Amino acid sequence: MATEPEHGDGEPVIGTPGELLQIAARHVNEGRFSAASTICEAVIANNPENATAFHLLGHIGSRTGKDATALGFFMRAVSLAPTNANFSRSFAESLERTGRYDQAIHAWGQYIILAPDDSEAISHLGVLQLRQDRLPEAVATHRQAVAQAPEDAMARYYLGIALYRTGQHE
Image 1 (tube, rainbow, N blue to C red):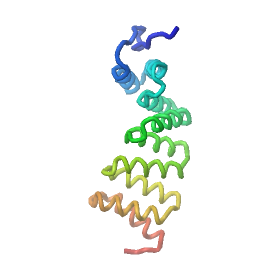
Image 2 (tube, rainbow, N blue to C red):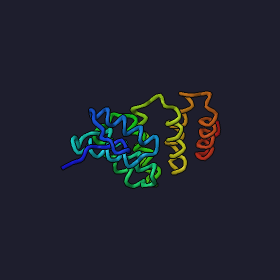
Image 3 (cartoon, one colour):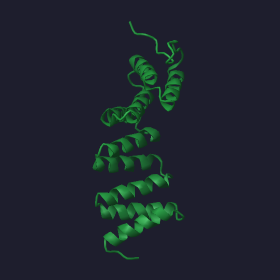
Image 4 (cartoon, rainbow, N blue to C red):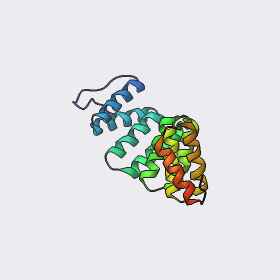
């Protein structure tokens, strides 16, 4: 028989899945990963399609140095809720942390479709493209970042690097 999830002090946690996941998120933020995992696993046992629970398990994996495990949880969260920008960003960051740069570039592009006003993410994508020698893409992405945030000195700096590396001197 399944046990009730606990607060971490032995007391059972009772509530809706949303309430339970809020408690789990607090546990994650406070570094109580075991208690958070127990709650997430109980939520998933009742609803194996709960993307938020998988997303929280991904954060637990990331925070405990289990990046490959985290990636699997983030991938599951995105597959269950493909239009959730937070899940998409976590997935892109996880791909990058695990060295899957081509997939990360694609995932960052998907995130930016969901969060087109995130100029920091656009610039980050351009830097990643630049690091992977995807120069035409890096130029286009950095142009987009500069157009969106002309005061961003770093976006302008990286645009200059991308242009220089492609032989374009504007």
